[in-house]
Image 1: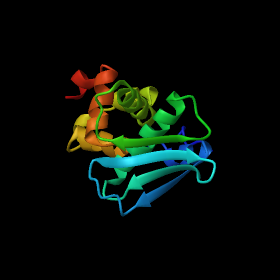
Image 2: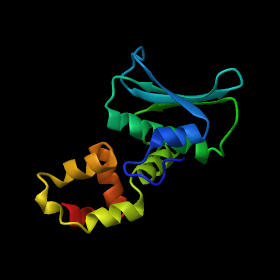
Image 3: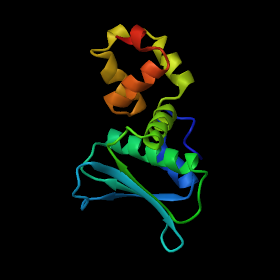
Image 4: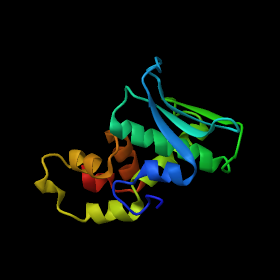
Length: 152
């Protein structure tokens, strides 16, 4: 099972599908480091999460690390990436776009946007809970799909 056909997207299942083990680490002291991924012959494929972040942020980080891995051509060894909160270079931006699309698939977002969302206390709370994403990711994805104007 890849985890692609579920909302929220089962990113840990997708990581496992690609051969990654995912671990939460308590001892990442740098608050700017959300996650890191690495591949080596000795340690196989791992994604290490900073346990200080929320579950939604961790889900995003896993999707982001998978984006780097897949966009790099799925290397099989000697690969390391540290996911800091810097989104200003091209590779980080591409992984950000990849992660937002993985976590908020276009067809599902459009299906949800057809609902009457005014019955929910805040539409953003509903969307972020449904897709299991941080608010920043939801806003970015809705803008990217030209749905933000209908949302606000």
